Length: 538
Image 1 (tube, one colour):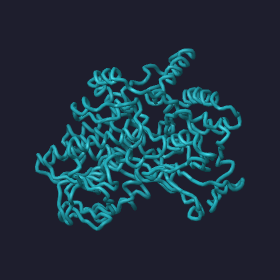
Image 2 (cartoon, rainbow, N blue to C red; image 1 turned 180 degrees about the horizontal axis):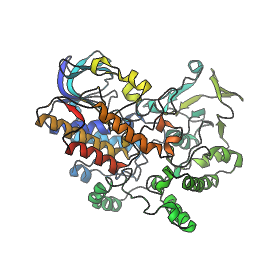
Image 3 (cartoon, helix red, strand yellow; image 1 turned 90 degrees about the vertical axis):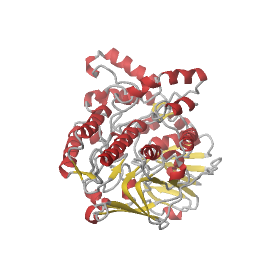
Image 4 (cartoon, one colour; image 1 turned 120 degrees about the vertical axis):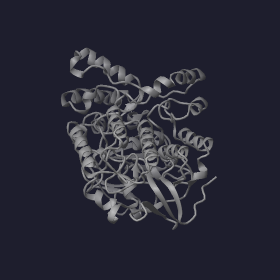
């Protein structure tokens, strides 16, 4: 069932996006008795797990924490098949949630929002969709995800390429037959790694174009038995509590010792144990010094480099694949499954773009400074305009017609990643300066943001208020706090999508709050406890 939207229809709330956040936000606001509608570009629910159907797409958060916690019945009835769910299983989960809670009747699919303008006279948001439909709502909630705006670099001559050109985030639903073809993959971030390790064995030749060498940790996946699922389910109450107390919203606490408080042998033993877990534990629940202590970062980074070198036969290739320009954990760390061994294959070539930069696309393939490489398929694993791209793709205008897109060109500002001064009744999720933008198990922080937004809207209704936005001073104070924490880290000094460094001209600032999930939740709860002090209500 798909929602029926009438031109000019007025609503209590509009939600943009039917992924993890949008579905829960819809459920939550319906529980308040509000008239709510979700607008979704795709023809189905799932967000990133609808779009990311490229080969090898898989979550690297364990399935026991990559899920909703609002329904015990849902927890009891859904059975995860693997420790790390593949794309198909994740998508099936969201389809199940949408059907079980009858959410589809309030979702309009195949609907792209072009514009959202605040109307000062009516204190409402007026939206226009690509098909010309107009809607009005008191509250606008964006549930777009931090990685929803694919980045396609302006490669010269790309339109002349006669083969197939595809971005991983827009992979054809019917798939692509790569068997026996010459394939090029541009990008070796998390997505590129998943694609490369998944297709190398079936293509005739694979050429990997690498700009930045990346660390990656071996994924130890497993199929769950009924006994595994029973054990996981028995721990759900404990897990539900644990995710709120850890630094990045996983269910594992960080190492309880400072790195240099341990003798070298114990440091090494601890790293070996973390590495052997086959998870992101060595990054998100290891020694926190990787984020701010250069000496510790150098030692831990060299430990990981040793692990990578040992898996690559050709020392010259290993030298290109082993990161030297940044410390472990200061950029996004993905899990991998045999990725580094791929470069031991005879049908795989690595192009270091620092040595041989791409000059242009040609009808037959890609020309680098070292010559032309003929290809049948080019896959762009070139990432996203993270944190901001989904919002700036929409013409959002607040008080006095001020454009968010134009404003953010010079200075990206939010208050706790939840609201923006000058844009009343606009609530954002996965936005800059909240942990959900990057430094959190997404479901943990997104569910917290949905709960905060829902409580805020309920508070307004209970107290006869209709409008809320943060004051300029409150926003500035949050940004100052954010910048102070970020400035003490190695992450903020490393060029990556975390800082907007992958987008030419984008303001350089760490996009995600790095103070940790407990500190962020405490700050948000204080706002509620003090009746939204620092916010302007009317």
